Length: 441
Ligand SMILES: Cc1ncc(COP(=O)(O)O)c(C=O)c1O
Image 1 (cartoon, rainbow, N blue to C red):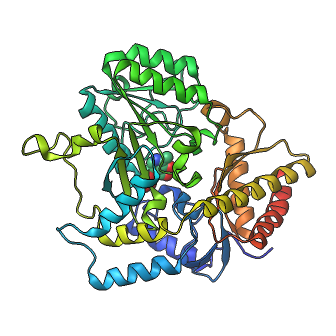
Image 2 (image 1 turned 60 degrees about the vertical axis):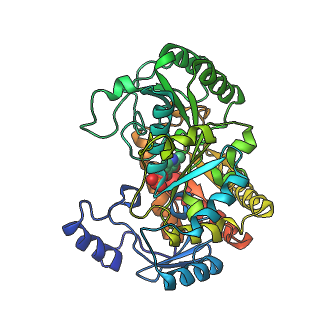
Image 3 (image 1 turned 90 degrees about the horizontal axis):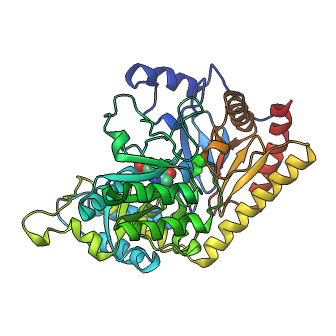
């Protein structure tokens, strides 16, 4: 066993104590919390992170799927350095924005035009606002348990549980943050992932009030289920029938292929929300879509656009340069290699579960995977939802992996970058072998 976690005398623990006095709960992202103390990073390179105590970890999270080439990629670093020397942000336009927009429009079929923003949250929020403005309608339909960032409407029913999630064919709309307006229940209708009959009925019921259906094709919090093509088809046909839009959230799934998940699943969205990998490691978001819809962002019909959008750091040249340096290095070979890494990880896990007689399973595609400490079929959120014992098991797995130099999320989501070598995959496998034995005991 390599690393002592938790370590009351570590620099990470000391920093957490300091952080707590000026930041509620010590850190600004609830997802980086590990109890009893988070791990503070000093630096990272390729597939590995080094913490402030000098411990090294194979990164199986990659900043929640935003790092794709590997940490501190030399080409991104060089491009960003050169931009830093030229200035970082101006209230004037720059060519860097056009370069990244051209690259994305060429690759992602659903994007004829793009507007940038600073996060996936903003991209989904902007997409919803665009759909509402385009259709002049208020309501959206979203999938139970699916994460789309922290905008009130987009996070409805993200944390539903058996005590409040309601009927299977008509899930309840549950606000995620306390204090969300009651109107949320009228403005967001919830369906279950892969429930063809449920989504068809919901679209028809909301009918002329429906602005859009919001869909992530492989939602991580729903367990990374396999998308049933007839579910995507029912959404596409149903939205067209009632004059509503399909918003595809590709914030994560863009890392599944050169043209994103829409190319893999043959989905034709009206709006695509993007973020994470397209910023090359810097804060980013983008709303892409068909020109007639994207027109809501243009001030062509008067002095003001139907949906004014901006942001002090939107399309800043550092992010745009980093994003272009990252995305232009990715080709079909990169995505084939990412899929190969993911396949080896998933296959290795299946072999471990079998050899240890564990009734566990793994889902996912490409460089993404999710471990489930049970064998319920993963079709929707309700099957994937962990009870408190299962959650405790996954947290314990995270701790046991930290001790063995692997950084992994607390709920079983994994993501690998392109710098991951076959030796690193073996390291993951060996660490997991021991960690699973300890946890399952
Ligand atoms: C599918 C999806 N949509 C939207 C978001 C929000 O992106 P951001 O964290 O950049 O705001 C995330 C973040 O994890 C996500 O996974």
